[in-house]
Length: 277
Image (cartoon, rainbow, N blue to C red; front, side, top):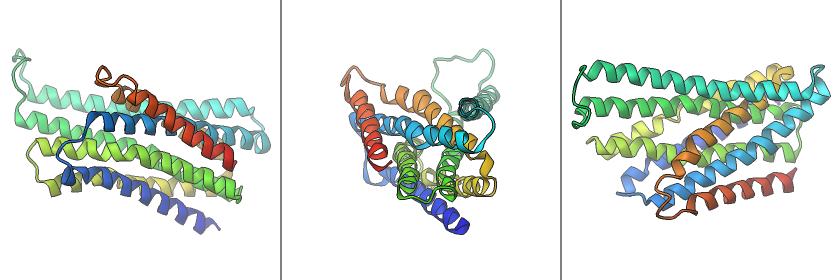
């Protein structure tokens, strides 16, 4: 049973990687992605992730903590949730620090800030974007792995569908991330094939993280409530800090496109979780 759960986590995260590759493939088939479409997709992904973070992660974390742990369930859920958010925050700070160091090495003191960026500096910033998205894919893969690892204690169809819903939520927001890597690389003059290869490579860490997350939960059942809440915190921070601000860009053209995307994504995931669970 343990091997089957880990294998399912591997398949699910391979699917999220495939969605990343599909997003990266837009650079091959589409010359220009319409802002309204991208905003709606990002908003939908944010809504899915916020809904899944509660019904598929936080609520099961609280229930399992009440059943199996001596610590108060609210304390376990809060610590896990905050830890997941802090993990993403620390990852983002590390990327920002590395990017600033790279810019300091390139830009001489007193240089004209309004001048056009040198090609190597633009490339360095693009590569930092690749690194940032790759880094953020680690906790996303862990979230999927943890959700499938929870099946060790609950073999019901509802629990399986909850895990699948987490994978779907992660996969949906991986599509624009793949495009966000490949399209800027194309602007820097890379061939379409190389842009695609680098874009999909940003999601390669998810199957590894997914398997590790599933193994960790399967082997150490007592950490399952904390791990579920951890995954929820990571997902909410990514949705609120990255996806929602990004989908609200250029909102003056179509003010409610992104907002309706968020509502639609939240409603769809809520409907799936409530009906199946």
